[in-house]
Length: 345
Image (tube, rainbow, N blue to C red; front, side, top):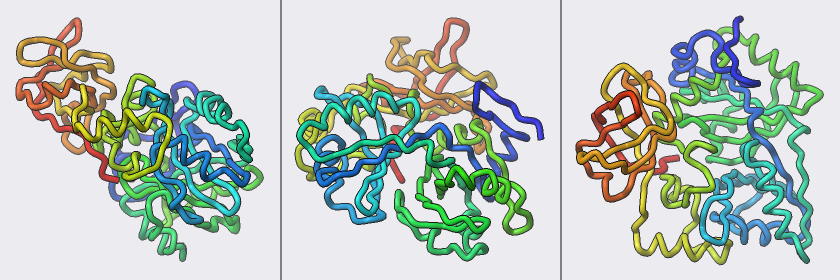
């Protein structure tokens, strides 16, 4: 099978349309090596992490998890992460692009606390499974209990005789799982999944189809919508990333002030664009008077609608503007419809 690659990532294996269809209706197999895993141990690990992230930690039981941001003192996002509680440890799952930032930031706040932070990324090969048919696929493999996991819940699953941890993570907007395959068994697990046939068949899915589906779903992505320039309330992920009535944590004062006032300078929006030519990331979003009111952060051609689709940060004062355009140095494209992104998973 021919692969179309960029750097060390596969953009697509066969066709983006076929792989998108697997996400929508079937089961897609996704390389998740762009994620890293830290482990926090020690008697103070729960309180320590609770004080450094925007979501609840103390209320979680073993096998439970949350999505959260880690902020600086000005309330700006340093990185986003998933964390899940295990016996005597907490796993911190985060994008590879934020690994060094996370290690430096978190380590700085281990002073007198009984906490040890280890990078265990190389202990596993990360394999993603996602798709509208995944729950049926799990039932056919006698793994129905995994299909009932809450978001970021942790369980175990056996593939080709190998038992491994599995976490629910709907990373591109539909039901999804992440398998933590031990390094020694990873090749056989991958081969077993790829060679599955019949009701157990899976489709190899590259990054392009994942990106189309997550942009359609309005999911903010690291280094696109999640950057050090962003505030948590701007991202559209506030509802799932920021716990209500949570005790003191770094950056909380800014977050709670924005929550109380219900006002942010800009908001993440999903923009459906007219025309056949795709605008580019970084292009301006302009209001009806031609003033720049935002920037495109992600762009794709929606397979669901056929239209160009953008995610963009747009000034709150312009989010109700019915005559937005996306403008580059060469061209301008009318925005057919626009909606503010809100977290739904």
